[in-house]
Amino acid sequence: MTVAMNDLSVTRPATREFLGTEHRNFIDGQWCAAVSGRTLAVIDPATGQTISRVADSDADDVNLAVQAARRAFEQAAWQRMKPALRERLLHRLADLMEANIDILAELESIDNGKSVAVATAVDLPCAIDCLRFMAGMPSKLNGSTLKPSVPFLPDGELFAYANYLPVGVVGAIVPWNFPTLLLAWKIAPALAAGCTVVLKPAEETPLTALYVAKLAAEAGFPAGVINVVTGYGHTAGAAISGHPGIDKVTFTGSTEVGRLILQAATGNLKKVTLELGGKSPAIVLPDADLDIAIPGAASGIFFNHGQVCTAGSRLFVHKSRFDQVVEGVADIARSMKVGPGLDPGTEIGPLVSKIQQQRVCAYIASGRESGADILAGGDSPAGDGFFVNPTVFVNTRPDMKIVREEIFGPVLVASPYDDLEEVIAQANDTPYGLGASIWSRDVSMVHKIAPRIRAGTVWVNCHNVIDAALPFGGFKESGWGRENGMEAVRAYTETQTIVISL
Image (cartoon, rainbow, N blue to C red; front, side, top):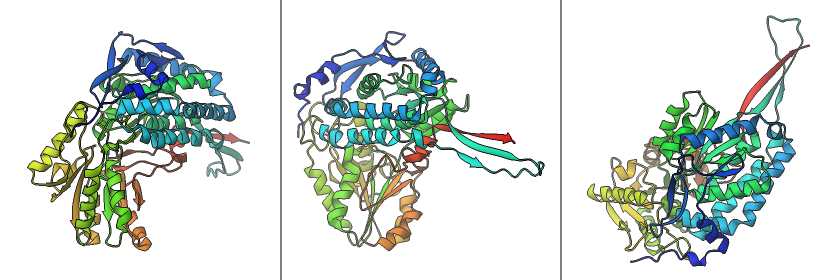
């Protein structure tokens, strides 16, 4: 099978105009070329062709952005801004993103490879919802009054209270799988808490971050509050991680890079939030409704082409239902339309880059060489672009790389199990602990199993369901801290205690 290439002529004129621009960094309210003058190419993964260029930034550019963010943080215009005004700014940005949702979705699709329909229905609405949810937080960061009982001041009368203060300048490093959504997950709680931000999008997918910066300026954020620096992770990203002027780093990406960020952050002991890798189990119990479980398991792994940190990449099915479930998932995989993201009928778009395509194909080859059997997929369609057909493996062993390691592509490994204790042990037999799902009609059994799964989120009869109000993060090597909800906002604050002798 050969897939068609993206037809950019179907996009909106504003999208094509933005693609035709040589983009610069957004620092201190101004568009600035990289200090070095270097640029890097932005590639359409459906064609392998260059579609735009952005600044190839390094430590010098990051330093300028941090200085701008520090000035903005210390100025009264931002530091003393009333909570209601900060809320209004976040709502304005959300409104502008909603007004430009079609352009943002097209940019996201062309830049990342994902379906424009999915970007319009999922990525952008969830990002906008996050901004609106966090817009309500500035007035909710209430402190508390305390009643000390100091033993060495038996007759002293004390009044004490605790405040939540913004942590300061935040370095936010965003991955390429959900560029706009995860941008919102980073900047919305940081801005709600009163911080300023230096944002680095992934080098593969920088376009929507730059477009959001344009909208933020239009919304009226003071200069320097939001800064966007594009470039590679080993240069611009590393400079953010180790910069002494940054008070907190928030990162979503691989566990390997998360460790490097931790090492770099030790210089000034900056606060760190990490949302890292996963190898999420999907457990189908014998009583599961297969009309729900089969398409749900397929969606759990093939959504966003498997480029999801919580992708349900390990499917465990009771042996009494195993053949029926895996054949059903394999049938779905075989029927999915592979194509460019701008095609409204596309269900599986290209992976984000040639490197990612090669990585996923190497895992498929490893599985085949290790003795696993392929029920569906296992190859790439002919033609340009970085496509991989949705793949289902059976007859796997726990020691195989495809079972142990995060593939980050549309590749499912399926295994039968005999009893509940066995499947719980298998589900937890991983260094990761980000997500999991249980498929069952037995509510009592679900409540017994879920707390025993070592994962930050356990879904029941669904997978990959997120919301701005729901804390999201992982156990073990899947990260530190939580995104979303009140927990996310608190992660961008410091607690200060005031004690007054009366």
